[in-house]
Length: 233
Picture 1 (cartoon, rainbow, N blue to C red):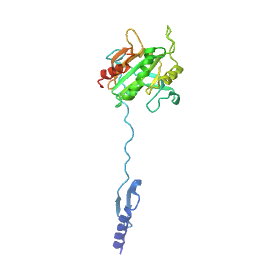
Picture 2 (cartoon, rainbow, N blue to C red; picture 1 turned 90 degrees about the horizontal axis):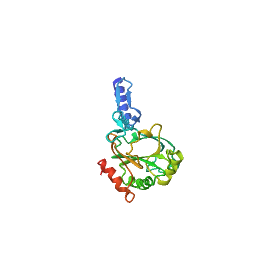
Picture 3 (cartoon, helix red, strand yellow; picture 1 turned 90 degrees about the vertical axis):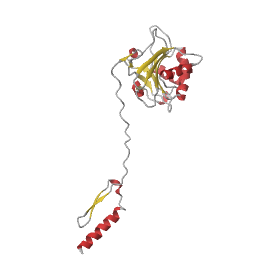
């Protein structure tokens, strides 16, 4: 009778095993005769959703000339995006160029240096947002270095200037002032002129070209040249 009882208990345990909620980690069941029955863990394993850590930014060969690795430029401003291009809806804070390093969305980086008083800079920023929307693999950071008046020595741009600049042109890429000690790390032409456009390879952060000015009759041709310099067209 004892053997029959053990067999019956084992059968019931096996039968109930199909009814028990095993998605809570599984486990084992034991019959009254001491027989251990392995209970399969049927709970689905969630995928690993943690993004991989970003690669470390290069530390060798950094400079401001063509062929150098560009400094990891940091600006104080607005992280504008295609989803939110209204700076009044965003916090004002620190933004770094390294967000584009080996970013799979970026085939080319344009570091655009502007002044609020500069008419060619205004022409460039009038056209560049639309170009970026149609060429999303061009990743842009716009650095506003001077304010509304051209002065000597220059009058540096302020937080209000950045706000006014972004409201005027509705960029959907980061815009801000150069951060502490960053101004001297910005590549420039010789002699310096604005806008200054620095073309960067996102795979290595190498400076591919530094030029200034804008084709006022066809700014998009300048942006096409940027993409071609990166081999992205």
